[in-house]
Every structure is written in C-alpha cells, then in structure tokens.
Length: 248
Length: 224
Image (tube, rainbow over all chains, first blue to last red; front, side, top):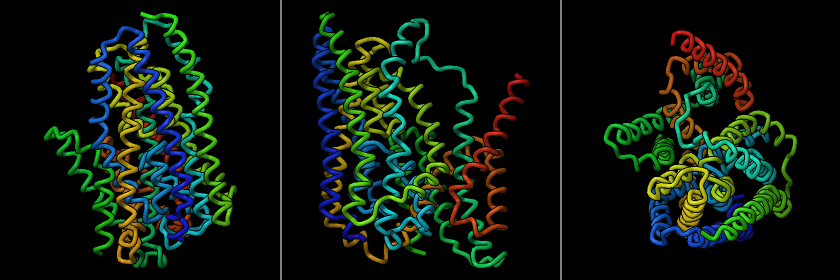
C-alpha cells in the first residue's frame, strides 16, 4: 500500500491539481495588481502588500509542511500534500480521515491497516466535508457582497458583540474532542475486558504530552509575546506527542 | 480612476471566481474516484455517508459561519481564492488583515478588494511553493518515514491532534469541558464495543456540550 500511495501516479494527479490552483492564484494576483494601477493605487504599496504577505506566510507554511509529514505515514505523501496545499487545514484533515477510517473498519489511521478501498473512501470524505466554502462562494459570494454593500452603515471590520454563535462553535469542538479523549480512556479501562485496565495506554499519554506541549507553546505565544510560535503550535505539539509514542 | 475598467474587473472577478471554484470542486471530488479506479477500489459510499453524518455536519456549520464572517472582510476575489486555498483561520485571514492594516484600506472598498486579493494570492502561492519544495525533500526520506520503528508515531496522529486541541478548547471553559469528557469516558468504559465508532458519539457529545453552553450563556445574559 505504501508504494501505491506514494506512486508517481498519485504525485501526478495531486501535483496537477496543485499546479492548477497555483495558476489560478497567479491569474488573480496579476488581475488585482493591474486593477490597483487602474484604480490609481501606489505601486509601492501594491508591491509591499505582496512582499509582506509572502514573508507573513513563510513560517506558517513550514508548520503546514510538518502537518504533511505527520499525515504522510498514514496516507502517503501526495494526498496530504494536496489537501494541505490547496484547501484543508491539519486539524480538519486528521479528524475527517479518522472518522472515515472508522467507517471502513480500520482500528487506527495508519499505513499498516490501509487498503485501497479505505484510502479512496477517506480521500472522498476529506474532499466532501470541506467543500462547502467553495460551494457557498459559487452561489452566494456576489449576492452576499452586493447586499452588504447596500448597507453602508455596517462595518465588517468592527468587532461585533459576542453572540452565542462563537460559544456554540467552541462547545461543538469541546464535545468532539471529549468524545475522542473519552474513547482513549474507555479503551484503556475496558478495552481488553470490563475494568481490567489492560488496554492501550499510549493514546492517553500521547494526548497528554501533546496538550502539555501545546500549553508551553501557548505560554510563550501569549505571555512572552512570541506570536510567531502560534504557526507551529498544533503541528509541533502533534510531532512531540508522536515522538513519545515511538519512545514508549 | 478608470471606472469602466474597475467595473469590468469586478464583474469578471465573479465570473472567474465561480468558474475556478467549480473546476476545483470537480477536481477535488473527482480525484478520489480516479485514484480508486486506478488502485483497484472505488470509495465506499455508505461509509462516506456515515462519516459525513458524524463529522461532516460539524464542518458544514463551520463552513457556513466562515463564509458569512470572512467574505465581507476579504471581498470577492480574496473570498473566492481563500475558500479554494484553505487554511483560513490559521493563515489567510491574519495575512489579509495584516496587509489591509498596512495599506490602511476599509472593507467594502475597491482598494480593499485589490489588497485582499493580492495578499491571499501571494500567501497561497508561497504555501504552494514551500510545500512543493518540502515534499521534494521528503522523497529521499520516505524509507525512514516508513520504517517499522516510526509506525507507532503515525498510528498516534489522531490522539496527538486531540491532545493539542483539548488544551486549545478546554481552557476556554474547563468546567464546561469536564462534563462531556467525564460523560464520554464513562460511556466508553461501560460500552467499549463502541470505541471503534467514536465518530458517531461526536453528535451526542457535541449536543450535550452546546446545550450546557447555551444554559450558561443565558444565565450570564440574565446576570448582566
């Protein structure tokens, strides 16, 4: 399976899609630059926007690359490369891949258990679950912006009063994470027979270590104002947790 | 200002944006079928539907919220590009906001539309180039990455992710988080057979947490 998921064919298909998106970005960039000149905007400012965006992105992109490495052991390199280059985000991709692997009967999201059917199913679910932003843009971007521009009093930059929507999103993710951490605890306590405490302890330790490393990242980012560390926090915490799994 | 040019620019942005969104969508959804056809097994559509029912709904709600919140900030071109290229919260939005602050533009203006599009396009291209270079360097490392000694690491990708996310989300309201965590732990201890179907339990766990969060939210509202 390893050879299949890292085959030139998969590199070709994933690389082709990435190349298409790269061309799209280039087209949008050139059009916007020309429009800026036509709108009488300062050329220097337009160039500064490009250079500042490039420098802003370098560190987070290295963090994303670590995510590709983290997923490459389970899904091969080309597919995570595509997902994280183009549309996805590490936390999303891993969750969806895990959910799909459960539905096709895999115990863990790993290459040793992967089958062709499991991989194509995981790949499709990953694609379907996060396509909604593009679909909404396709149907409603023009209409939504037109409607907003008709209401000049509303400034989207101003922070709005915090409603239940933000709280609900946090609660949703707390519920999601709790279900998985709870399953690791349940697996350890009763995985090999009710209350035998002989199940696999590794996922619990890995989760704890990742959480601890995340806390360290957050401390330095928030208390020591090293905001750039945030770009590496998730991928960095995951990698340390994964290293602990090897050492156990 | 060349008004006619800009009007045409805005109109074409939507045409191009819609076209490339549709093509990207077809490519991304079509790729698993093409790959499945070549490697000898098509996707299991029943499993896809079940998987979508467990985690997909959460991400659908999240996508709607992201669309409603970020589209006004990004404008037309930036919006289309950002939803195609992903990594919104962790990269594209802060990057576009940084560029906007530097340029001093306001949302809803032509200038902001241009700055936002330039910023998202440059950012996306940078990520694509860095990841392509990184993957190129990863190729010689494949034998090491696939060695049996490293397999425990890759088998624990998901616990590693949820550990990091647990810290990120639990700290926002630790008392609230303890309720679903304890409930789910007890549930899986008592019904270990369902551990292999954890994703299904996301729905009741999420519903309980949202319900509790709503009660707390209402209580705080009354106190204020």
